[in-house]
Length: 534
Image (cartoon, rainbow, N blue to C red; front, side, top):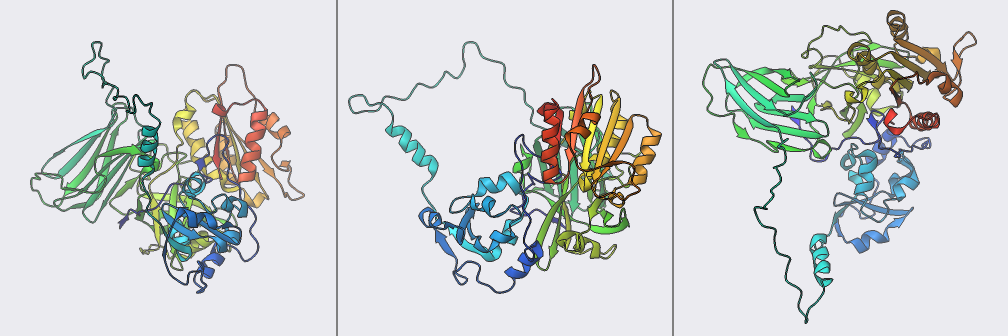
């Protein structure tokens, strides 16, 4: 049930992920008949998308450069060349954005915008072939460097002497921050202990998958990922438990033996075992899930409850997102979503295990939406091959809230989803907090997500305030009208003396870019603004 694809990547420009400063993702309105589903139909129509009648060729750099026009556009992604001419009118970023990669290796451009997209599935009918092997650029660079060395009597000078192995004033060795692990057993359990060597959150640092005898433990520490991976030597029950000692940075994973027998080892080490690397360089791991329940939130938005496998323990940290993957008409579709709690006001007595086996996603169901419509059509409780969910992704950290006294949230539509758990986390776990204010933009009153729950929270906790802004209100609406503008934010974003502020923004790309610009105009610095980019 555990699937680790060879080419799956985290979203950089998704609505649930923070964009680097100054970076934005532009979308264009597609012509009628050019949706993702229309593209899927076109690729299955039998049309020759490459112009090569099914042949695959080796492509040289010289040949690739020739195909750099609107009506003849090839590009290379990770060594594979695609003819994307037919895809021009279907590209959500528009023709100009796609043409930036015309006739060149577009891997870096692709990664900057949407590494999470499964281009192999989407462009499989556009595959021209593989880039021809060439001499290593490293070798070429070294040769050029050797040529540039000064000559003495026609000979290159001798190499510089190596530094002595033991300098007279040796510096202290760098601190070893790499995590390590150990294990022990009892008659009934096997316990794997990870020592992270740093303070960690009380929940959400580790994701454990125990599926078909394979145990995979991934511990996310800031931007880094520590992975343990074994094929277990004996059978265990299909359940796991995690105990976290956050102050000392220790995580203990408990397995239950099926037979009371002594283990001599943890088993065969599998791919990437005991590796410590940047999370964004780690292959995304998916596991199957099943639709357990769905409830209406508004007229077009539903709360979907997904059940994870019994051997999976995964708690998604606040502000992080997951990727939902489905097979629709033999094509793989992937979208990022930020989980919410089952309600805006969850039980504060919940333990780390609560919520580790289920996910709640608040999703707007579009009539022509490929993934949202597919999810809405699934049978309740039926395990299959069509739905899988990734491990948590994204750089958001609750450390941003340390010392914050004023938390301002600007959300539009389903851009509210990252804010839902953030509100609860701030009100229940931030002792310095004086005020949390949400300005929530929607078209009509019926579009407001968790409207009554937001009002209940505002009435219950004096530190929380919410204001709704509608762009298409009814005549009876007495609240604010219009779209985000400077005058609205001037009234909202105040700086009491001695305060420390954070402004979080999430919504469609145009909303986010405009709102962030207006906030900066009011004197807020980059460090005081956190934009979940869409």
